[in-house]
Image (cartoon, rainbow, N blue to C red):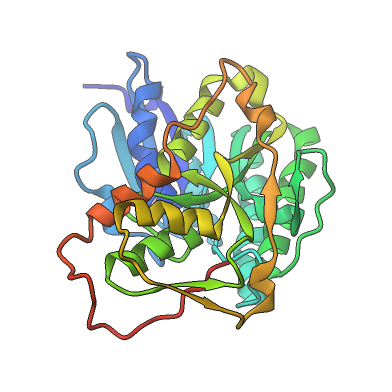
Length: 331
């Protein structure tokens, strides 16, 4: 019988979400002959049970259904863990103002409590998936740029970062990845972000709604490249710990995303609107530093490939859908 206590164990919070559902599959290749145990903590409020189905057998998996706001659940999940990859958060749009109190509670205080319990449990390696939104509009920003977050979501994530960094003198060894907007297919896809939302509208036969002329930009990254970045961090621990990195494949305009969809669906309709002035703002980051760390990391998936991948999953829909049109929140 295998001694479970001797295994290398990684805890992934939010492991049943969009990024987590793919990451728990990709982490297995870190084992290098050593049996790896991947533990998932998720309250399943936004996660999908599909994330736990058809997992590869090259690693062992443990699932704890619980909330990061529940100290008892977190303490239990941290037992025997060497590293934590913290994905659990309430995700919002960069300029969104929805649910400010709840957003701060989960993203900031949930992270701060998790950090404290990591230190109590003797878990020092901590990888946090943050967001480019902490810089605020403008850019391109490198990692030394001042953070001027706007809106509850960006503020809560920046507060979480500050809690993580404040724990470094007490023994925490964090890496913070300020990730671009994810796109592409995964076992549990999220369609609220700009790229995937456009693909969903096109795939279900509805017009794409673009605010202004669509020149506003967002850092974007394919979900598989995001997983590769996290694996890269774990594989290059000596040069990635106690650092902050921007992780994005490109700073893409909304029109760039529309054009990528048109490569697969040239007949898609596009509607331009002036309904929301906040969505005209651009966010850009400079991701050079992360590409130069360790052996280097480079994105492998283009925007066109990611859009084509998503559209392929909607091939059963006719070119014009009978569903009611939905105005996309293209931010």
